[in-house]
Amino acid sequence: MAVSDRAEKASQGASAVTTPTTTLDGAAIRSNLTKAAHAVVAVPDATLEPILCAMFAGGHILLEGIPGVGKTLLARTIARCVAADFRRIQFTNDLMPSDVVGTAVWRPDVGRFQFVRGPLFANFVLADEINRTSPRTLSCLLEAMEAGRVSIEGRSIELAQPFTVLATRNPVEFQGTYPIPEAVLDRFLVRVELTYPEGALERSLYTGRDSEQALAQIGPVMSREEVLALQQQVDRVEVGDLVAEYVYRVVSATREDDRVVLGASPRAALAWLRVAKARAFLDGRDYVLPDDLKALAVPALAHRVFLREGGDAGGLLREIVSSTAVPV
Image (cartoon, rainbow, N blue to C red):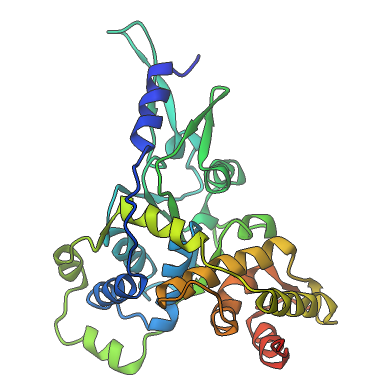
Protein backbone atom coordinates (compact mmCIF):
# COMPACT_ATOMS: atom_id res chain seq x y z
CA MET A 1 0.00 0.00 0.00
CA ALA A 2 1.38 3.43 -0.91
CA VAL A 3 0.23 7.00 -0.69
CA SER A 4 -0.42 8.57 -4.06
CA ASP A 5 1.91 11.27 -5.31
CA ARG A 6 -1.07 13.43 -6.15
CA ALA A 7 -2.31 13.36 -2.56
CA GLU A 8 1.13 14.32 -1.30
CA LYS A 9 1.45 17.20 -3.74
CA ALA A 10 -2.04 18.43 -2.93
CA SER A 11 -1.18 18.38 0.76
CA GLN A 12 2.00 20.33 0.19
CA GLY A 13 0.21 22.82 -2.03
CA ALA A 14 -2.44 23.43 0.62
CA SER A 15 0.24 24.20 3.19
CA ALA A 16 2.02 26.76 1.04
CA VAL A 17 1.19 30.27 2.20
CA THR A 18 2.62 33.48 0.80
CA THR A 19 3.54 35.78 3.65
CA PRO A 20 2.97 39.51 3.33
CA THR A 21 5.96 41.81 3.43
CA THR A 22 4.31 44.56 5.48
CA THR A 23 5.46 45.14 9.04
CA LEU A 24 2.81 44.19 11.58
CA ASP A 25 2.05 46.08 14.79
CA GLY A 26 2.68 43.54 17.53
CA ALA A 27 1.18 45.66 20.32
CA ALA A 28 -2.05 46.18 18.38
CA ILE A 29 -2.34 42.49 17.58
CA ARG A 30 -1.87 41.53 21.22
CA SER A 31 -4.52 44.05 22.25
CA ASN A 32 -7.04 42.72 19.74
CA LEU A 33 -6.42 39.08 20.64
CA THR A 34 -6.64 39.80 24.36
CA LYS A 35 -9.92 41.68 23.93
CA ALA A 36 -11.41 38.82 21.89
CA ALA A 37 -10.33 36.20 24.44
CA HIS A 38 -11.75 38.15 27.36
CA ALA A 39 -15.10 38.35 25.59
CA VAL A 40 -15.40 34.56 25.72
CA VAL A 41 -13.45 33.06 28.61
CA ALA A 42 -12.54 34.35 32.07
CA VAL A 43 -8.75 34.23 31.83
CA PRO A 44 -6.25 36.72 33.31
CA ASP A 45 -3.69 38.46 31.13
CA ALA A 46 -0.83 36.68 32.91
CA THR A 47 -2.23 33.35 31.72
CA LEU A 48 -3.04 34.50 28.21
CA GLU A 49 0.33 36.16 27.53
CA PRO A 50 2.53 33.03 27.34
CA ILE A 51 -0.04 31.36 25.07
CA LEU A 52 0.11 34.22 22.56
CA CYS A 53 3.89 34.38 22.81
CA ALA A 54 4.23 30.65 22.10
CA MET A 55 1.88 30.84 19.13
CA PHE A 56 3.83 33.68 17.53
CA ALA A 57 7.14 32.00 18.36
CA GLY A 58 6.01 29.04 16.25
CA GLY A 59 5.66 26.67 19.21
CA HIS A 60 3.04 24.50 20.85
CA ILE A 61 1.11 24.99 24.09
CA LEU A 62 0.16 22.62 26.90
CA LEU A 63 -2.85 23.78 28.94
CA GLU A 64 -3.27 22.19 32.35
CA GLY A 65 -5.96 22.61 34.95
CA ILE A 66 -8.80 20.90 36.76
CA PRO A 67 -12.00 20.15 34.81
CA GLY A 68 -14.31 23.08 34.24
CA VAL A 69 -11.88 26.02 34.25
CA GLY A 70 -12.08 26.65 30.49
CA LYS A 71 -9.06 24.89 28.97
CA THR A 72 -10.88 23.67 25.88
CA LEU A 73 -12.87 26.87 25.52
CA LEU A 74 -9.70 28.97 25.67
CA ALA A 75 -8.02 26.84 23.01
CA ARG A 76 -11.06 27.13 20.74
CA THR A 77 -11.13 30.89 21.26
CA ILE A 78 -7.48 31.35 20.33
CA ALA A 79 -7.94 29.26 17.19
CA ARG A 80 -11.09 31.15 16.18
CA CYS A 81 -9.24 34.47 16.37
CA VAL A 82 -7.17 33.39 13.37
CA ALA A 83 -8.84 32.86 10.00
CA ALA A 84 -7.34 29.41 9.55
CA ASP A 85 -8.28 25.73 9.61
CA PHE A 86 -9.14 24.35 13.06
CA ARG A 87 -9.65 20.75 14.16
CA ARG A 88 -10.29 19.13 17.53
CA ILE A 89 -9.09 15.65 18.48
CA GLN A 90 -10.51 14.02 21.61
CA PHE A 91 -7.79 11.65 22.74
CA THR A 92 -8.99 8.35 24.21
CA ASN A 93 -7.30 5.07 25.07
CA ASP A 94 -8.63 3.40 21.91
CA LEU A 95 -7.57 6.15 19.50
CA MET A 96 -5.36 4.86 16.69
CA PRO A 97 -2.58 6.74 14.84
CA SER A 98 -4.65 6.60 11.65
CA ASP A 99 -7.46 8.44 13.47
CA VAL A 100 -5.08 11.36 13.97
CA VAL A 101 -2.91 11.38 10.84
CA GLY A 102 -5.18 9.73 8.29
CA THR A 103 -4.86 6.60 6.20
CA ALA A 104 -4.64 5.31 2.65
CA VAL A 105 -8.04 4.20 1.33
CA TRP A 106 -8.71 2.08 -1.74
CA ARG A 107 -10.65 4.02 -4.40
CA PRO A 108 -12.30 1.59 -6.83
CA ASP A 109 -13.21 4.41 -9.23
CA VAL A 110 -9.55 5.27 -9.84
CA GLY A 111 -8.14 1.81 -9.14
CA ARG A 112 -5.59 2.80 -6.51
CA PHE A 113 -5.07 3.87 -2.91
CA GLN A 114 -5.48 7.52 -2.01
CA PHE A 115 -4.48 9.22 1.20
CA VAL A 116 -7.35 10.63 3.26
CA ARG A 117 -6.01 13.28 5.59
CA GLY A 118 -6.82 13.14 9.29
CA PRO A 119 -7.65 16.03 11.65
CA LEU A 120 -3.95 16.72 12.18
CA PHE A 121 -3.89 18.52 8.81
CA ALA A 122 -5.03 21.89 10.10
CA ASN A 123 -3.41 25.14 11.17
CA PHE A 124 -4.67 24.88 14.74
CA VAL A 125 -5.20 21.49 16.35
CA LEU A 126 -6.83 21.14 19.75
CA ALA A 127 -5.50 17.91 21.26
CA ASP A 128 -7.86 17.33 24.15
CA GLU A 129 -6.63 15.23 27.10
CA ILE A 130 -3.47 13.91 25.49
CA ASN A 131 -2.65 11.81 28.56
CA ARG A 132 -5.61 9.53 27.78
CA THR A 133 -4.11 7.99 24.66
CA SER A 134 -1.49 5.30 24.17
CA PRO A 135 2.18 6.13 23.56
CA ARG A 136 1.88 4.73 20.03
CA THR A 137 -0.81 7.22 19.08
CA LEU A 138 0.92 10.04 20.90
CA SER A 139 4.11 9.44 18.93
CA CYS A 140 2.51 10.49 15.64
CA LEU A 141 1.47 13.77 17.23
CA LEU A 142 5.01 14.33 18.48
CA GLU A 143 6.50 13.86 15.02
CA ALA A 144 4.12 16.48 13.68
CA MET A 145 4.98 18.91 16.48
CA GLU A 146 8.71 18.42 16.12
CA ALA A 147 9.14 18.27 12.34
CA GLY A 148 5.98 19.84 10.89
CA ARG A 149 5.31 16.70 8.87
CA VAL A 150 3.99 13.16 9.23
CA SER A 151 5.19 9.82 7.87
CA ILE A 152 2.70 7.70 5.94
CA GLU A 153 3.67 4.43 4.26
CA GLY A 154 7.32 5.43 4.03
CA ARG A 155 6.60 8.94 2.74
CA SER A 156 6.80 12.29 4.53
CA ILE A 157 3.93 14.70 4.02
CA GLU A 158 4.27 18.33 5.08
CA LEU A 159 1.62 19.83 7.33
CA ALA A 160 -0.14 23.14 6.86
CA GLN A 161 1.59 26.33 7.96
CA PRO A 162 1.26 27.83 10.46
CA PHE A 163 0.83 24.71 12.57
CA THR A 164 0.08 25.02 16.28
CA VAL A 165 -1.00 22.31 18.72
CA LEU A 166 -2.93 23.40 21.79
CA ALA A 167 -3.05 20.35 24.04
CA THR A 168 -4.93 19.96 27.31
CA ARG A 169 -4.16 17.73 30.26
CA ASN A 170 -6.07 17.11 33.46
CA PRO A 171 -3.42 16.91 36.22
CA VAL A 172 -5.70 15.55 38.98
CA GLU A 173 -7.75 12.78 37.34
CA PHE A 174 -5.47 9.82 36.62
CA GLN A 175 -7.92 6.95 36.09
CA GLY A 176 -7.52 5.68 32.54
CA THR A 177 -4.56 7.93 31.76
CA TYR A 178 -0.93 7.42 30.77
CA PRO A 179 2.02 9.27 32.28
CA ILE A 180 3.55 11.82 29.91
CA PRO A 181 7.34 11.34 29.64
CA GLU A 182 9.77 14.22 30.10
CA ALA A 183 10.76 14.09 26.43
CA VAL A 184 7.14 14.61 25.43
CA LEU A 185 6.71 17.59 27.73
CA ASP A 186 9.81 19.13 26.16
CA ARG A 187 7.98 19.32 22.80
CA PHE A 188 5.72 22.03 24.21
CA LEU A 189 7.18 25.51 24.08
CA VAL A 190 5.19 26.60 27.12
CA ARG A 191 3.02 24.98 29.75
CA VAL A 192 0.25 27.10 31.22
CA GLU A 193 -1.92 26.20 34.19
CA LEU A 194 -5.50 27.43 34.36
CA THR A 195 -6.87 27.83 37.88
CA TYR A 196 -10.12 29.12 39.31
CA PRO A 197 -10.91 32.54 37.82
CA GLU A 198 -10.61 35.69 39.88
CA GLY A 199 -13.68 36.83 41.76
CA ALA A 200 -14.81 39.53 39.35
CA LEU A 201 -14.20 37.33 36.31
CA GLU A 202 -16.06 34.39 37.82
CA ARG A 203 -19.04 36.49 38.90
CA SER A 204 -19.39 37.73 35.33
CA LEU A 205 -20.05 34.12 34.30
CA TYR A 206 -23.12 33.98 36.54
CA THR A 207 -24.87 37.06 35.16
CA GLY A 208 -26.26 35.38 32.08
CA ARG A 209 -23.26 35.53 29.75
CA ASP A 210 -23.25 32.54 27.41
CA SER A 211 -19.66 31.59 26.56
CA GLU A 212 -20.65 29.51 23.52
CA GLN A 213 -22.71 32.36 22.12
CA ALA A 214 -19.87 34.79 22.76
CA LEU A 215 -17.47 32.43 20.96
CA ALA A 216 -19.78 32.27 17.95
CA GLN A 217 -19.92 36.07 17.78
CA ILE A 218 -16.20 36.82 17.69
CA GLY A 219 -14.52 36.93 14.32
CA PRO A 220 -10.95 36.47 13.14
CA VAL A 221 -8.48 39.06 14.34
CA MET A 222 -5.78 38.10 11.86
CA SER A 223 -5.17 35.78 8.92
CA ARG A 224 -2.85 32.80 8.76
CA GLU A 225 -0.62 34.78 6.38
CA GLU A 226 -0.26 37.44 9.05
CA VAL A 227 0.58 34.79 11.65
CA LEU A 228 3.41 33.53 9.46
CA ALA A 229 4.65 37.06 8.81
CA LEU A 230 4.57 37.82 12.53
CA GLN A 231 6.53 34.66 13.30
CA GLN A 232 9.19 35.79 10.85
CA GLN A 233 9.38 39.20 12.50
CA VAL A 234 9.71 37.56 15.91
CA ASP A 235 12.72 35.61 14.62
CA ARG A 236 14.46 38.91 13.86
CA VAL A 237 14.15 40.24 17.42
CA GLU A 238 17.66 40.73 18.80
CA VAL A 239 19.17 39.10 21.88
CA GLY A 240 22.08 41.05 23.35
CA ASP A 241 25.16 39.59 25.01
CA LEU A 242 24.05 40.67 28.49
CA VAL A 243 20.64 39.06 28.03
CA ALA A 244 22.32 35.86 26.86
CA GLU A 245 24.54 35.95 29.94
CA TYR A 246 21.46 36.30 32.17
CA VAL A 247 19.86 33.26 30.51
CA TYR A 248 23.03 31.26 31.11
CA ARG A 249 23.14 32.25 34.78
CA VAL A 250 19.56 31.18 35.38
CA VAL A 251 19.75 27.81 33.62
CA SER A 252 23.09 27.09 35.27
CA ALA A 253 21.51 27.76 38.66
CA THR A 254 18.83 25.15 37.96
CA ARG A 255 21.52 22.56 37.31
CA GLU A 256 23.50 23.39 40.45
CA ASP A 257 20.59 23.46 42.92
CA ASP A 258 20.58 20.43 45.24
CA ARG A 259 16.79 20.16 44.98
CA VAL A 260 16.96 19.53 41.23
CA VAL A 261 17.58 16.15 39.63
CA LEU A 262 17.38 17.42 36.05
CA GLY A 263 18.07 21.08 35.30
CA ALA A 264 17.26 23.18 32.27
CA SER A 265 19.04 22.04 29.10
CA PRO A 266 20.43 24.30 26.35
CA ARG A 267 17.31 23.48 24.32
CA ALA A 268 15.17 24.66 27.22
CA ALA A 269 17.15 27.92 27.31
CA LEU A 270 16.61 28.41 23.57
CA ALA A 271 12.88 27.79 24.01
CA TRP A 272 12.83 30.38 26.80
CA LEU A 273 14.49 32.89 24.50
CA ARG A 274 12.01 32.14 21.69
CA VAL A 275 8.98 33.11 23.74
CA ALA A 276 10.85 36.09 25.23
CA LYS A 277 11.48 37.38 21.70
CA ALA A 278 7.77 37.05 20.96
CA ARG A 279 6.90 38.99 24.12
CA ALA A 280 9.31 41.74 23.14
CA PHE A 281 7.73 42.02 19.70
CA LEU A 282 4.20 42.08 21.12
CA ASP A 283 5.40 44.88 23.38
CA GLY A 284 6.57 46.89 20.37
CA ARG A 285 10.31 46.22 20.70
CA ASP A 286 12.89 44.56 18.45
CA TYR A 287 15.15 43.51 21.34
CA VAL A 288 14.73 41.30 24.41
CA LEU A 289 14.86 42.68 27.96
CA PRO A 290 15.44 40.68 31.16
CA ASP A 291 11.83 41.51 32.11
CA ASP A 292 10.65 39.47 29.11
CA LEU A 293 12.57 36.49 30.39
CA LYS A 294 11.42 36.90 33.98
CA ALA A 295 7.75 37.05 32.94
CA LEU A 296 8.01 33.78 31.00
CA ALA A 297 10.47 31.75 33.08
CA VAL A 298 7.84 29.52 34.69
CA PRO A 299 5.73 28.80 31.56
CA ALA A 300 8.84 28.06 29.48
CA LEU A 301 11.03 26.20 32.00
CA ALA A 302 8.94 24.66 34.80
CA HIS A 303 7.98 21.57 32.76
CA ARG A 304 11.63 21.10 31.76
CA VAL A 305 13.10 21.17 35.30
CA PHE A 306 12.53 18.17 37.58
CA LEU A 307 12.90 18.11 41.36
CA ARG A 308 14.30 15.24 43.39
CA GLU A 309 11.19 15.00 45.55
CA GLY A 310 8.76 15.58 42.71
CA GLY A 311 6.28 18.40 42.52
CA ASP A 312 6.21 21.47 40.32
CA ALA A 313 9.37 23.49 39.74
CA GLY A 314 7.56 26.80 39.40
CA GLY A 315 8.36 27.99 42.93
CA LEU A 316 12.03 27.10 42.55
CA LEU A 317 12.26 28.97 39.25
CA ARG A 318 10.68 32.08 40.73
CA GLU A 319 13.24 31.92 43.52
CA ILE A 320 16.16 31.50 41.12
CA VAL A 321 14.98 34.25 38.76
CA SER A 322 14.48 36.74 41.58
CA SER A 323 17.89 36.01 43.13
CA THR A 324 19.93 35.94 39.91
CA ALA A 325 21.59 39.26 39.18
CA VAL A 326 21.08 40.82 35.78
CA PRO A 327 24.47 41.55 34.14
CA VAL A 328 25.30 45.23 33.85
